[in-house]
Length: 293
Image (cartoon, rainbow, N blue to C red):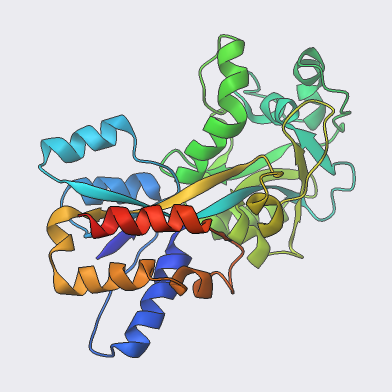
Protein backbone atom coordinates (compact mmCIF):
# COMPACT_ATOMS: atom_id res chain seq x y z
CA UNK A 1 0.00 0.00 0.00
CA UNK A 2 2.80 2.45 0.93
CA UNK A 3 6.28 2.75 -0.56
CA UNK A 4 8.94 5.42 -0.94
CA UNK A 5 11.27 7.35 1.31
CA UNK A 6 13.29 5.46 3.91
CA UNK A 7 13.27 8.72 5.89
CA UNK A 8 9.48 8.96 6.01
CA UNK A 9 8.98 5.21 6.48
CA UNK A 10 9.33 5.33 10.32
CA UNK A 11 6.58 7.96 10.52
CA UNK A 12 4.17 6.08 8.25
CA UNK A 13 4.95 2.83 10.07
CA UNK A 14 4.43 4.43 13.48
CA UNK A 15 1.07 5.81 12.37
CA UNK A 16 0.11 2.42 10.94
CA UNK A 17 0.98 0.63 14.19
CA UNK A 18 -1.14 3.05 16.21
CA UNK A 19 -4.04 2.70 13.75
CA UNK A 20 -3.85 -1.09 13.71
CA UNK A 21 -3.86 -1.19 17.51
CA UNK A 22 -7.29 0.37 17.38
CA UNK A 23 -8.36 -1.53 14.23
CA UNK A 24 -6.96 -5.10 14.48
CA UNK A 25 -8.55 -6.26 11.23
CA UNK A 26 -6.83 -3.54 9.20
CA UNK A 27 -3.70 -4.70 7.33
CA UNK A 28 -0.91 -2.71 5.76
CA UNK A 29 2.33 -2.95 3.83
CA UNK A 30 5.00 -0.22 4.07
CA UNK A 31 8.37 -0.25 2.28
CA UNK A 32 11.21 2.27 2.13
CA UNK A 33 13.30 1.76 -1.04
CA UNK A 34 13.81 5.50 -1.52
CA UNK A 35 11.77 8.47 -2.71
CA UNK A 36 12.63 8.08 -6.40
CA UNK A 37 11.91 4.35 -6.48
CA UNK A 38 8.72 4.98 -4.56
CA UNK A 39 7.48 7.45 -7.15
CA UNK A 40 8.29 4.96 -9.93
CA UNK A 41 5.99 2.42 -8.28
CA UNK A 42 3.40 5.08 -7.46
CA UNK A 43 3.23 6.43 -11.01
CA UNK A 44 3.00 2.84 -12.30
CA UNK A 45 -0.15 2.43 -10.21
CA UNK A 46 1.42 -0.13 -7.86
CA UNK A 47 0.94 1.75 -4.57
CA UNK A 48 -1.72 3.83 -2.86
CA UNK A 49 0.60 6.19 -1.00
CA UNK A 50 4.14 7.35 -1.76
CA UNK A 51 6.34 8.57 1.10
CA UNK A 52 8.72 11.34 0.01
CA UNK A 53 11.58 13.28 1.57
CA UNK A 54 11.27 15.90 -1.17
CA UNK A 55 8.56 17.25 -3.42
CA UNK A 56 7.75 15.29 -6.55
CA UNK A 57 9.92 16.26 -9.55
CA UNK A 58 8.40 17.66 -12.75
CA UNK A 59 9.40 14.58 -14.72
CA UNK A 60 7.85 12.27 -12.10
CA UNK A 61 4.65 14.32 -12.12
CA UNK A 62 4.61 14.04 -15.92
CA UNK A 63 5.00 10.25 -15.69
CA UNK A 64 2.08 10.09 -13.29
CA UNK A 65 -0.02 12.32 -15.54
CA UNK A 66 0.72 10.17 -18.59
CA UNK A 67 -0.39 7.12 -16.63
CA UNK A 68 -3.55 8.88 -15.47
CA UNK A 69 -2.43 8.91 -11.83
CA UNK A 70 -3.77 11.92 -9.95
CA UNK A 71 -2.55 12.53 -6.42
CA UNK A 72 -2.83 14.67 -3.31
CA UNK A 73 0.41 16.15 -1.88
CA UNK A 74 0.41 16.31 1.93
CA UNK A 75 3.21 17.87 3.96
CA UNK A 76 3.56 15.99 7.27
CA UNK A 77 6.74 17.05 9.11
CA UNK A 78 10.24 18.50 8.87
CA UNK A 79 13.56 16.68 9.02
CA UNK A 80 17.22 17.59 9.06
CA UNK A 81 20.06 15.86 7.26
CA UNK A 82 23.06 14.98 9.38
CA UNK A 83 26.55 15.34 7.89
CA UNK A 84 28.62 12.59 9.46
CA UNK A 85 32.11 11.33 10.06
CA UNK A 86 33.70 8.71 12.28
CA UNK A 87 33.70 9.23 16.04
CA UNK A 88 37.48 8.86 15.75
CA UNK A 89 37.80 11.91 13.49
CA UNK A 90 38.86 14.62 15.94
CA UNK A 91 40.18 16.91 13.18
CA UNK A 92 36.73 17.86 11.90
CA UNK A 93 33.98 19.42 14.02
CA UNK A 94 32.34 22.04 11.76
CA UNK A 95 32.01 22.46 7.98
CA UNK A 96 30.46 25.19 5.86
CA UNK A 97 28.48 24.58 2.69
CA UNK A 98 31.62 25.69 0.82
CA UNK A 99 33.73 23.07 2.60
CA UNK A 100 31.22 20.34 1.82
CA UNK A 101 31.09 21.43 -1.83
CA UNK A 102 34.90 21.21 -1.96
CA UNK A 103 34.78 17.63 -0.66
CA UNK A 104 31.83 16.11 -2.53
CA UNK A 105 30.72 18.62 -5.17
CA UNK A 106 31.14 18.06 -8.92
CA UNK A 107 34.67 19.51 -8.95
CA UNK A 108 35.98 17.07 -6.33
CA UNK A 109 35.97 13.90 -8.44
CA UNK A 110 39.11 11.94 -7.70
CA UNK A 111 39.92 13.68 -4.42
CA UNK A 112 41.28 10.97 -2.12
CA UNK A 113 42.15 13.13 0.88
CA UNK A 114 40.22 15.80 2.76
CA UNK A 115 43.05 18.23 2.02
CA UNK A 116 42.57 17.75 -1.72
CA UNK A 117 39.51 20.00 -1.36
CA UNK A 118 41.48 22.77 0.34
CA UNK A 119 42.10 24.87 -2.77
CA UNK A 120 38.41 24.94 -3.69
CA UNK A 121 37.33 25.65 -0.11
CA UNK A 122 39.84 28.51 0.15
CA UNK A 123 38.77 29.87 -3.24
CA UNK A 124 35.20 29.97 -1.89
CA UNK A 125 36.35 32.02 1.10
CA UNK A 126 36.60 29.32 3.77
CA UNK A 127 39.17 29.52 6.55
CA UNK A 128 38.66 25.84 7.42
CA UNK A 129 41.79 23.69 7.41
CA UNK A 130 40.88 20.35 5.85
CA UNK A 131 43.03 17.55 7.28
CA UNK A 132 45.64 15.58 5.37
CA UNK A 133 43.69 12.35 5.85
CA UNK A 134 41.95 9.78 3.68
CA UNK A 135 38.52 10.90 2.46
CA UNK A 136 36.23 7.85 2.40
CA UNK A 137 32.70 8.88 1.36
CA UNK A 138 29.49 6.90 1.78
CA UNK A 139 26.09 8.45 1.11
CA UNK A 140 22.69 8.07 -0.52
CA UNK A 141 22.43 7.31 -4.22
CA UNK A 142 20.48 9.22 -6.85
CA UNK A 143 17.33 7.18 -6.17
CA UNK A 144 17.14 8.74 -2.71
CA UNK A 145 15.24 11.88 -1.76
CA UNK A 146 17.98 12.51 0.77
CA UNK A 147 20.47 12.75 -2.12
CA UNK A 148 18.23 15.21 -3.98
CA UNK A 149 17.65 17.35 -0.90
CA UNK A 150 21.36 17.40 -0.08
CA UNK A 151 22.20 18.59 -3.59
CA UNK A 152 19.42 21.17 -3.63
CA UNK A 153 20.26 22.64 -0.21
CA UNK A 154 24.05 22.36 0.00
CA UNK A 155 25.53 21.94 -3.50
CA UNK A 156 23.29 23.56 -6.10
CA UNK A 157 23.79 27.28 -5.45
CA UNK A 158 27.59 27.03 -5.34
CA UNK A 159 27.75 24.70 -8.36
CA UNK A 160 25.60 26.94 -10.53
CA UNK A 161 27.60 30.03 -9.53
CA UNK A 162 30.74 28.21 -10.69
CA UNK A 163 29.20 26.99 -13.94
CA UNK A 164 29.07 23.38 -12.78
CA UNK A 165 26.32 20.75 -12.85
CA UNK A 166 24.28 20.69 -9.64
CA UNK A 167 25.21 17.22 -8.47
CA UNK A 168 27.79 15.40 -6.38
CA UNK A 169 30.99 13.72 -7.47
CA UNK A 170 30.11 10.24 -8.82
CA UNK A 171 33.02 8.38 -7.25
CA UNK A 172 31.79 7.52 -3.77
CA UNK A 173 30.10 4.57 -2.10
CA UNK A 174 26.38 5.13 -2.66
CA UNK A 175 23.48 3.14 -1.24
CA UNK A 176 19.73 3.45 -0.78
CA UNK A 177 20.14 1.57 2.50
CA UNK A 178 20.84 3.86 5.45
CA UNK A 179 22.38 0.97 7.40
CA UNK A 180 24.97 0.49 4.65
CA UNK A 181 25.82 4.20 4.82
CA UNK A 182 26.32 4.03 8.58
CA UNK A 183 28.53 0.96 8.13
CA UNK A 184 30.63 2.88 5.62
CA UNK A 185 31.04 5.83 7.96
CA UNK A 186 32.01 3.65 10.90
CA UNK A 187 34.39 1.64 8.72
CA UNK A 188 36.95 4.42 8.25
CA UNK A 189 38.43 6.76 10.91
CA UNK A 190 38.27 9.74 8.51
CA UNK A 191 35.00 8.99 6.71
CA UNK A 192 32.40 11.41 5.37
CA UNK A 193 28.72 10.85 4.62
CA UNK A 194 25.18 12.00 5.20
CA UNK A 195 21.79 10.53 6.16
CA UNK A 196 18.47 11.78 7.49
CA UNK A 197 18.79 13.18 11.02
CA UNK A 198 16.41 10.64 12.53
CA UNK A 199 18.56 7.75 11.34
CA UNK A 200 21.74 9.47 12.51
CA UNK A 201 20.20 9.93 15.94
CA UNK A 202 19.33 6.24 16.08
CA UNK A 203 23.04 5.52 15.56
CA UNK A 204 24.43 8.21 17.83
CA UNK A 205 27.55 6.92 19.50
CA UNK A 206 28.55 5.02 16.36
CA UNK A 207 28.96 8.14 14.21
CA UNK A 208 29.86 11.80 14.77
CA UNK A 209 27.46 14.52 13.67
CA UNK A 210 29.37 17.47 12.20
CA UNK A 211 28.17 20.98 13.02
CA UNK A 212 27.25 22.97 9.91
CA UNK A 213 27.47 26.60 8.86
CA UNK A 214 25.60 27.74 5.77
CA UNK A 215 28.05 30.59 5.21
CA UNK A 216 31.84 30.47 5.14
CA UNK A 217 33.27 31.18 8.58
CA UNK A 218 29.74 31.48 9.98
CA UNK A 219 28.13 30.12 13.13
CA UNK A 220 28.38 26.36 13.49
CA UNK A 221 25.08 24.69 14.38
CA UNK A 222 24.62 21.11 15.53
CA UNK A 223 21.71 19.14 14.07
CA UNK A 224 18.81 18.44 16.42
CA UNK A 225 15.03 18.53 16.46
CA UNK A 226 15.28 21.91 18.22
CA UNK A 227 17.63 23.49 15.67
CA UNK A 228 15.62 22.14 12.75
CA UNK A 229 12.44 23.50 14.35
CA UNK A 230 13.83 26.99 14.99
CA UNK A 231 15.42 27.17 11.54
CA UNK A 232 18.99 27.63 12.75
CA UNK A 233 20.22 24.31 11.35
CA UNK A 234 20.67 24.94 7.63
CA UNK A 235 20.36 21.40 6.23
CA UNK A 236 16.65 20.70 6.71
CA UNK A 237 13.66 19.88 4.53
CA UNK A 238 9.91 19.14 4.56
CA UNK A 239 8.58 15.58 4.39
CA UNK A 240 5.51 14.48 2.44
CA UNK A 241 3.09 11.70 1.68
CA UNK A 242 1.41 11.52 -1.72
CA UNK A 243 -2.00 9.83 -1.87
CA UNK A 244 -3.39 8.56 -5.15
CA UNK A 245 -6.81 10.19 -5.64
CA UNK A 246 -8.35 6.92 -6.77
CA UNK A 247 -7.03 5.21 -3.65
CA UNK A 248 -8.37 8.00 -1.44
CA UNK A 249 -11.83 6.61 -2.23
CA UNK A 250 -10.89 3.26 -0.65
CA UNK A 251 -12.22 3.15 2.93
CA UNK A 252 -9.09 1.45 4.28
CA UNK A 253 -6.81 4.09 2.75
CA UNK A 254 -9.01 7.06 3.65
CA UNK A 255 -9.30 5.90 7.26
CA UNK A 256 -5.53 5.55 7.55
CA UNK A 257 -4.85 9.02 6.15
CA UNK A 258 -7.64 10.51 8.28
CA UNK A 259 -5.92 9.04 11.33
CA UNK A 260 -2.47 10.06 10.06
CA UNK A 261 -3.47 13.73 9.87
CA UNK A 262 -5.69 13.85 12.95
CA UNK A 263 -4.54 16.24 15.67
CA UNK A 264 -1.94 14.55 17.84
CA UNK A 265 -1.17 11.48 15.71
CA UNK A 266 2.09 12.60 14.09
CA UNK A 267 3.12 14.32 17.32
CA UNK A 268 2.67 11.00 19.14
CA UNK A 269 4.87 9.17 16.62
CA UNK A 270 7.49 11.92 16.75
CA UNK A 271 7.92 11.40 20.48
CA UNK A 272 10.17 8.46 19.58
CA UNK A 273 11.97 9.78 16.45
CA UNK A 274 13.68 13.20 16.13
CA UNK A 275 11.63 14.66 13.32
CA UNK A 276 9.95 18.01 13.79
CA UNK A 277 6.21 18.61 13.96
CA UNK A 278 4.64 21.01 11.50
CA UNK A 279 3.58 24.33 13.01
CA UNK A 280 -0.13 24.31 13.80
CA UNK A 281 -1.03 26.46 10.79
CA UNK A 282 0.87 24.20 8.38
CA UNK A 283 -0.74 21.06 9.80
CA UNK A 284 -4.14 22.75 9.47
CA UNK A 285 -3.35 23.55 5.83
CA UNK A 286 -2.42 19.90 5.22
CA UNK A 287 -5.67 18.76 6.85
CA UNK A 288 -7.64 21.22 4.70
CA UNK A 289 -5.96 19.90 1.54
CA UNK A 290 -6.90 16.34 2.48
CA UNK A 291 -10.46 17.24 3.48
CA UNK A 292 -10.94 19.05 0.17
CA UNK A 293 -10.06 16.02 -1.93
